[in-house]
Amino acid sequence: MKKIILLVVLAGICLTTFSQNANFIITGSSLKLINTGGVKLLLHNTNFENNAADSSVQGDSELILTGSNEITMGGLFANSFHNLQIDKLGSAVILGHHLNISNQLTLNSGNVDIGSNNLNLGTGNLVGGSDSSYIKTSGSGVMKRYLTRGDQIFPVGNASYNPAVLTNTNSSSDTFNIRVMDNVTQDGSGLGFTLPFPFVKRSWSVGTSKTGGDNNVSIRLHWDKEQEMNGFANAVSFMVRHDGANWEKLGSILGNAFDKNSHTVKGISHFSTFSISSHSELISNILQRINKVYPNPFTSSFTIEIASKLEERAKLRLYSISGNLVAESTMELKIGLNPIQMKNLDHLQPDNYIRMVENNQQLFSKRIVKLL
Image 1 (cartoon, one colour):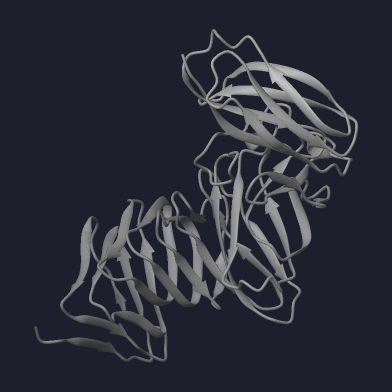
Image 2 (cartoon, rainbow, N blue to C red):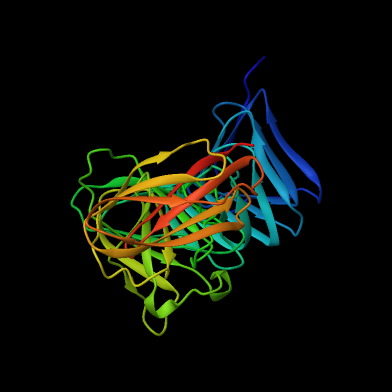
């Protein structure tokens, strides 16, 4: 097929408007908007589909998406724009492929739902970002930004706007990625068993392209009061991070009176999933681990061997896979190895269950199987 390149080179402004419910499709050809004076391609309630490998909006050119109808932006290839402006009047732009923006993303109204795709802002600028216009991370996709020194906001959220601010205090730069999940699960993935403790019902997955661990980053997370679980106490809350096996407390700082629903933690070089909890005051620094659980599967009882460095009280709870508490016991731990038995479980239906052990510092959880 013959390749056609559309070049628009103007010193003025070019507005191209498509009617409501139209489709703007690039197929078999390339669209290139290149200029020095602000060419604007305006699509009103119009889907954008890129099926040409090297299409782009370059130079000072800008794509503006307007209207009140939900639209899709996808095609066979990722979309690349110099400037992208979202004016969707409370509706959404649904990504069907990755999106790259080289200069500026403007969020005036409406969300960009990235789903399983990535939105890469790179070194570009961000204008806007609010409760009514943010990057919606409804799937596995992430928002990416390149951090040099200073603050960078990630205007992300899922069911609500829950932005994160990253501050790079290191001399080296790096690309960071973030997505928000609307729950807190035992494995930190957002897909496993939802923890029934007083958390903010949000978790932020933060990643980096650097693997050397020489980052020095501050992270500030924001939430709203209606996202707090029953029993959550803001005054004694703190940030937590999933270390790959369990949730651990971080020495974070609660926001001031003007920003009381935020926490900031400094000096982070290991990135994972973060959340906010007030489950306990967590004033002790106890190392505790579970040596073994037996039998697994069980029929009427099972035993957990817990190693503790201090004498303290801990709780053993058993939850159904749907999150209902089905059994509970309190134990007084001694220094050393403690075998703890949970009995009289004959009445439970054969199924998978989640057993949790918690003390003042850590929460351990894992699946266990009940037989007939």
